[in-house]
Length: 345
Image (cartoon, rainbow, N blue to C red; front, side):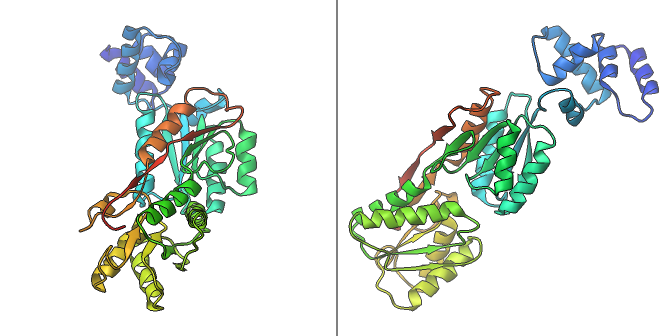
């Protein structure tokens, strides 16, 4: 690189904010060519691309994606809306999204809803202002306003973790209803008929409600009903699962097995059994959902359903990037689930 040109560029940009024109001048290319390198659009000779990238590095140039989006149909942003980042389930989905975007010019812009549909609506509005190439969100349920914005935007949309209803564009995940039925069938095949349920807030986590409905449907196939159930109002946690199971058992109901809304709750239930000296599964069988590592680290590995969270995130962005046009009709990708037999049920 020509040191004289660098010094001239620095003199012309006293604010310390180099422009694309500065990059083009230093690399001895047109501004259009420099722009195509930055946006990774069209064919660029390897030697030219290298010169432009070296100029970007030398000058510390940062592309203005927001400004670029005004001159094109979309930016290089993929909006990603998740219920939580502290929940390992969604951290693994995000890991899959990052893997799917690796080697592409796209970058995720992440928002967290804390399981709130109104918060999701606000995030959708904010993300659409950036003209993203696509939006990835969680679940098929949205406020009417959010759905209206998504449908009117025409950008690619992926709705994750649920395939039980019709998506706007692309749904990637599993049937939570069928997972609930599979749990019921597994427990009945193991000889359990007196089955109870422990869960958390269905308004915050509608997918757990779908699994509950599937569980009840699966039991009804053999003429059975839940013998007892206890559901907390707040979010799931190991502590909530421990307390909820304790309350369920205090009434003295005749229970052989308990299906929990997820592994967090089931791990807490296992801890209650340890504290109360209840042999698992000899006296009480426990079953979870998600296949989290913590459940498999228990003294007796948790019996549960494995949801393919990494695959969900990765498949979603890979399919979104295949085409700029929405799926017509909307497309459903079933990443499936599997039973982890474990040692607790």
